[in-house]
Amino acid sequence: MGIKKAEYVFSEKTVTYYFDATFSSLAEIVSKDHTILITDENVFNNQQEKFNGWKTIVIRPGEEFKQQAAVDEILQQLIKYEADRKTFVVGIGGGVVTDITGYAASIYMRGLRFGFVPTTILAMVDASIGGKNGVDAGIYKNLVGLIKQPDFLLFDYSFLETLPREQWINGFAEIIKHACIKDEYLFQLLENETLENFIGDKNKLGELIERNVQIKTNVVLKDEFENGDRKLLNFGHTLGHAIENNYQLLHGHAISIGMVGASIISEKINNFSAEQKARLVRLLEKYHLPSHLDFDHEKIWEILKMDKKRVGNEMNFILLNKIGEAIVMSIPFTELKSLINQI
Ligand SMILES: NC(=O)c1ccc[n+]([C@@H]2O[C@H](COP(=O)([O-])OP(=O)(O)OC[C@H]3O[C@@H](n4cnc5c(N)ncnc54)[C@H](O)[C@@H]3O)[C@@H](O)[C@H]2O)c1
Ligand SMILES: [Zn+2]
Image (cartoon, rainbow, N blue to C red; front, side, top):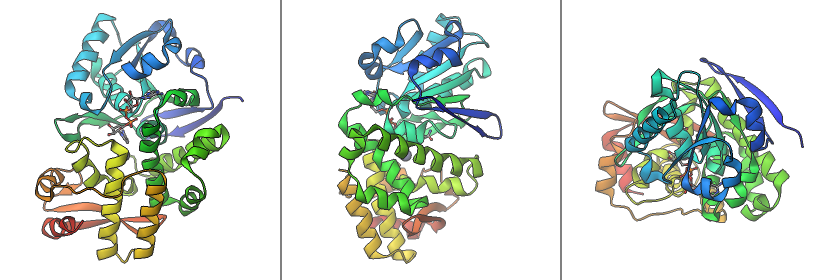
């Protein structure tokens, strides 16, 4: 199978996507001498042979290390490697690695060029696309960062061979999110398939990933700086982010619960049907995702209030009209608080 190359023109630069690529072709895109790779311990230990001959910075894995301290450590190591303006930085990992890499590369010497090799389903279909980079500040998700596009994304599905099953499940939450907001056909396709079918069939998986890359890319191209349509990608994320770090949930698990919460609100104030809500819950459960959490409403409200989608005393909340179609609705805090209390 040959590499499929696609180019997308963002406001700041053209981003090249290499589908069906192998990691070894990275050496044809960037020069080994002027490139520093950033990955985490899990990816490094599982796929060590891929890193032979590359200067590599290995960070600690997981959301708890997606903090400014990890960025500072990377900056120190870039200095040690004597990285300069010609240095290219490539993040190889899940969304934590790509978010941190884009951010660290963007601030070192006011900005080095960078690219990503996403290694989780979630990073392939979502986190590596669109140029949002950054870190959490304590429990506040993605509070610090910037929007800057990578030069390229390289998709090598062989990384997924070592991805733990729970991380496959994690990534399917964003796939189901895409189906909910933009693609009813994809929703039906997922209803007719199973996780095991995708894990076991490389072609099926490749098609699924590319379809989702396309959905996310189209949304971002239309609205890079999140004035309109890009907000829809936050479906399930307002409540999801509030519970994610507080209950130490995987991102996908948190937004799965968040999507059900948003669909309950959609039913109450946006005529989303109870039957479609039940269909969403069934699909999430089919892909082994949680649909409910008994959370502490007061505590979660205090975190939720700090969400970046807050505007004064209102919150831009993403609701469904129907499966495949979402809208942004501005909900006053008092009303939102009572709606959240009913979840
Ligand atoms: N920038 C964006 O637009 C955007 C969008 C969605 C999510 N995100 C962020 O992405 C993060 C979640 O991403 P994630 O789920 O990929 O998390 P992650 O980077 O923590 O990866 C999940 C786990 O899988 C391990 N792993 C990664 N690749 C592996 C492989 N090939 N084999 C074995 N283990 C592997 C990692 O070490 C980690 O333990 C969150 O921080 C979220 O905020 C960002
Ligand atoms: Zn997400």
